[in-house]
Length: 221
Image (cartoon, rainbow, N blue to C red; front, side, top):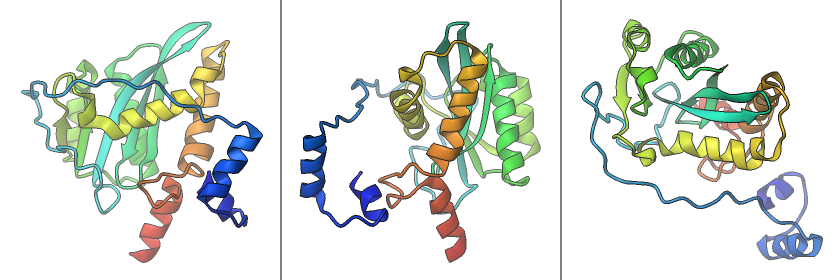
């Protein structure tokens, strides 16, 4: 919040920002703390090549994928996202009422399309059955992408993508009453692109948005 105010031209420090927050009665939305398991068995299909190397120096090097569920009055549906770890940008997403391989492949195809045909050196995901399918394996092989999988039940091996879902739910979807799936999809896309990718500041990315981080990186290169 302090960085955002400074960027908007306000002159203040951390202590003054804290006083103003207290005076205005503002309270941050904090997600519940969880205890995550460690360890876990490696996949026989693909080892954990990523090995928690979450900060590659260039874009289109390491991409990660994960799936979560969203509740609406019409029932649950599923969201798959593809993230570029370098910038933390969400570059592909897909929705479905079934968490099958079509969902994950659609998100990956969108990411490749948005990157103008560029594919990553490495693609990392959890040990979900969707990623083990012949359809998923075929598309990875066609782009000569190295496949990497988290250890079984170990969320920390894919922590950055999991962190995006926590942000999505704690900042947006958990506070919305979605009547229809279509309403939820429109609202989540509105969070991903104009807010998360373009505006949301990341403290591990120089307190700027993923889009701005990529812009600065490409400008420097």
